[in-house]
Every structure is written in C-alpha cells, then in structure tokens.
Length: 490
Picture 1 (tube, one colour):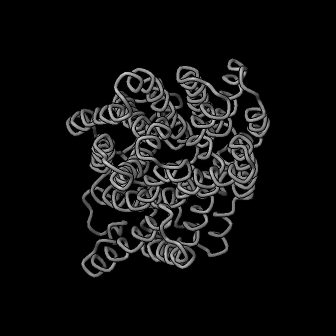
Picture 2 (cartoon, rainbow, N blue to C red; picture 1 turned 45 degrees about the vertical axis):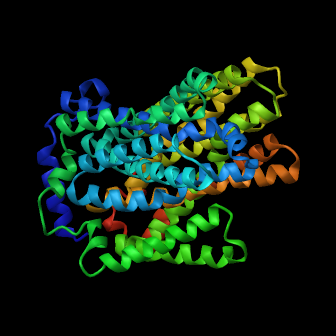
C-alpha cells in the first residue's frame, strides 16, 4: 500500500469513527453491539454444523462399514475445501462487503450440513462435508473481519476472542443435540437440524449494516486493488483451472486414494497455494506462507483432540453417550471461557505475549487429561475445561493476529485464505492421530503426543514473531494494517 493511500485511508477511518472511542463492550454503540451479536450467532451455528461429524463417526463407520482411519477422512473432507471457501468468499468480502460474504457462507454450511443427512455412501458424504467446509471458511474470514473492522483498534483482541467464543458454544449445543436426537432418530437427523442457520441469513440480509472500516476504505471505490483481482478477466479461467487441479489433488490425498502419487500431489498443492498467495498478497506472499505454516501447526495440536476426543472417550475409556456429552460440554465451555479471557488479557498484555503464555500453561493439562483412567468423570471434566480454555481458547486471538498482517482491502481474503490453507492441518490431524494410535496401541497417548509437541512449535513461531520478521526482512511492513512489531501486538 502506498504512503499516500494509507494516510487517506486512516483519515477516512478516523472520520467514520465516533469522537469518543469506546473502551468496553457497554460503551459500544447499539449498531456495533447488534452487528457483533449477529456475527456471533453466525459463528455459533457454524460451530454447531461443523462439529456434527465428529459426534457420529462410530455410527457412520458402522453403517458404511468403514475402518476408523477411513471414517476419520470424513472429518478431513471439510478441511479439503476450506482453502477455496476462504479464497472465493474472502474475495467477495473484500470487493462487495463483509455482509454479503457472511450471508453466502452461512447458507453454504447450512445447506451442506443438511445434505449430509441424505448421504448414501462414503463419497457422497465426503462431497457434502466439502460444501460445509467452503461455508465455514467463508464465515471465519467474513465474520472476523466484519467485527474487528467495526470495533475500535484498542478493543480488537476482545472483538476476536469474544467472537470466537461462539464456536465452542455451538459445539456444546451440537453435543446436546446428539444426545437428544441420535439415540431416538439416528445420526441422519442430527444433520437435518443443520439447516436451521438458513433462518439467520434472512435476518442478516435485512438488518445488518456494513463494517465501518471497509465502508470507509473500500466501499464503492473502483481505484482500490482488492483480492477480487484473482477473478479478473485475464486471470479468471487460469485460476479456475488451478483451483480444480488443487481440489482434485487434495481429495485424492485426504481420501487416501492417491497411492504412489501422494508426494507429487503434495508438491503440486504447495506450488498452487504459493501461486495464489503471490497473486493475492503481492510482496506480502512470504508473510502469508509463514502464517499458513503457523496455523497448520496450530491445527495439528488442536484438531486431533477436537475430532477424535468423542471416539477416545467411547472406545478406550468406555464412557456411554451421556457421559461423553457431558465431557464435551465442559470442554466446549472451557474453550468459550478461554476465548473471552484471551481477548480481555490480549488487549492488556498484547496479542503475542498472551498467546504464548496461554499455550505454555496448556501443557500442564494436556498429559493429565490422557493419562486419566476411566471412572474419573468429574476430574476429567475439570481437566478438559482447563485444557481447552488455555489451548483452544487462546486461539480466539488468531483472527486478530492474522488480520493485523493485511491491509483492509485484502484482509478478508488474506485472513480467510491463509487461515484456511493452514487449516489443512485439521485434515491431517485426525489421520495422524488415528495412524499414530495404531502404532502406539493407544489413541489417548497419540493425542497427547501430538498436542504437546505441536503446542511448543506454535508457541515458538508466535513468540519469535516469525511472519513479521519475514515481512521486515523483505521491507513490506509498511503494507500491513497493524505491524506485529507494535506494542499492541507485542
């Protein structure tokens, strides 16, 4: 971003902001609170729809006669498509506004979830879960940028953490829905309930205002280069073909049907993502790649637990459905509480400092959770609450951390694409967890190993501020909206 454009953008943003900057949720305007709750509700329903597959893996494996590693690829299916949702819906959000991107995203994950209930075999369910993934990716990018751009800069860690607290509440509601629906009606009815978020899209379309910062800096202007350049006349067909190639490669890899072609296909995928990153972020593309690696590792420490915890509790510890639901409820509440706390502390101590502190504290709970024998259900609740509050809850700062590396004109696609390419770690995670468990003879030990080791890796990457260091080395800090070197992010 040129210096003159940045100055004009900052003046416009200041003009659009109220003269008295809020410092607490109560001081936000009625419009800001309304916008936040709408986005929060969308994220809650996103969490509800996305987590459903993890609750019924054993039932689906039984009906479709799948092994646990094969069934785990159905969790990965939604991650295979997330990069595309983050890219396409992010570009829509950057060019046409955060609001329409959010509406399209919610519609996609709701329809995809409902279609899962009609799946007739493994591949149909894989395809419908991919639709859910496209919607979830778009929702993450659109909602996060929407809320952060509508709140003052001094409260953006809180905006990020408070918003992401909705996701685990959605997972708690999904666990409760599982207990109420599946024993009586079967696993398909759980997915039919996923259509409920469609009602939210009608509300959003009628009553939600556009994000103030996007309106001030982009709006109806035609002289601002946004991420929609990916779909310009000269690039549209080539990028569409590249997207098809990457999608096909990822399906083959994560459905475990690539055979001896796995390594060449992985190379094709990596090169393809770099090509998209270079088009999207310009000189910022190495920073974007570093963020993708960070998020990839974050998913490798968190998603083995999120995706395989219900299976672990049912199989190795022998808990029945209601006990599993209670355990997941406490884990989800810990995640939500941790996200809120991370946002509050992050605005006081700084994004990175808070993030690293939370990750290292979480190590005190990871290994006790999976060393605990069956029959200690109350202690399990306590440990799960604490572990998820510090490990998963701290990820409530991720939108703020990632979004600060991109200017407003590229933020929805920059955040959505980099986060959701990194989220392929969530596709690898259940497969890695199941495979390591087969070698170790214990799913619990495998989950503890992955969570513990990758937590340290992520803490080191964020602690040493690797993406921003790369940006400074390339001399592109001036293009960032809020460089990680500022005291805000220290």
